[in-house]
Structures are given as C-alpha cells and as structure tokens.
Length: 206
Image 1 (tube, rainbow, N blue to C red):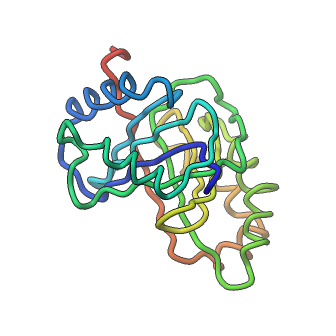
Image 2: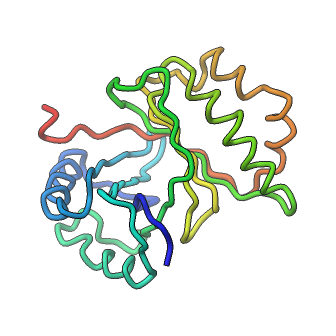
C-alpha cells in the first residue's frame, strides 16, 4: 500500500486533439467526482507527451491492485487507449504556495529524477529547504510541489505551476538554480527528465 495524493496518467506520445482531451477530461471529472477533487490535463510544449492528473479528494492508501483497477476505467472514450499509457501513484511530501498563488495556471513544469548512490538524503534536503521554496518565491510561480513516485520512473517528482512562458528563464529563477548548493547537488541527478507542459482549457473554462 502507498499513500497517494495524485494519480498521474502518462503517455509519451498521443496525437488526439486538444478538443478531444478537453471533452474526455470533463467526462472523467463527472465520472469520478466522488473520488477526485480535480482532474486536469497537460500536453508537452515541445513533445507529444500527455500527463493527466487525478487529484484525490482525500489522500488514501492505494495498493498496486487498486491502481490496476483504476487503469481499467481509462480509455473507454479512446483518448487514452494505447500501449504507452502508465498510471503512477504520487505521494505529496512538499507543497509550497508561490509568489503568484491564485493566478491562472498556463504552464506546468515537471522534473523527475533519481539520485546517485549515497546522495539521496542531501538531494531531498536541498529540494525541501532551498530549491523549491526559492523557486516558489519567483514571480510567475503559482505553486511548487514535490512527490514521491511509488511506481515506474524516477523516485523524485517535482512540479511547478506557472503563469506564463519565460518564468524558468527569468533572472530570479536562474539565480535560485545557480546557488552553490545547487551546483553541488545537481551533478548527482540520475535518470532525469525535464518536461514543460501547457495547460489544456476545459469546456467550462470557455
């Protein structure tokens, strides 16, 4: 069993239209309203990757069997039905409101990584005490969260909700990334994937 706050459905390649994904998301929200507080879809800015987040209304212990049962409910409309679909249980261990908290989310930046042998504890301290709080203070950052990935992929899953393009290239963001502690920790990243996503507008959003 794993404490789960979010289920993220991931595909590395999907060419369904934005309209199809928006319609499917509205359907998922209605179908799972009792279980999930929110469902939202992100598509890669420079890739065909799709991440669909199912935010649990109440954190719960989900087993592998529970996850697989949920997987069987996906794809009934054809949007997520292909061999590249994975479902991952994420446990939230850090949630920091950003400088732009309350503004509309336009982009979603995800950093997934493992750590070199012997460096995991320092990586987590760096994330929780310097890096993510520092990035959350940058104008344009709405929220910064870090999760533990209980399934496939790197164990650390950090994500940032952003108001606009260019936040991650701003002087304030780059200054946080350039700290001495960052320079010491970042070479210890392993199996790292960084992906920028755009937020899909749902029918209710206009």
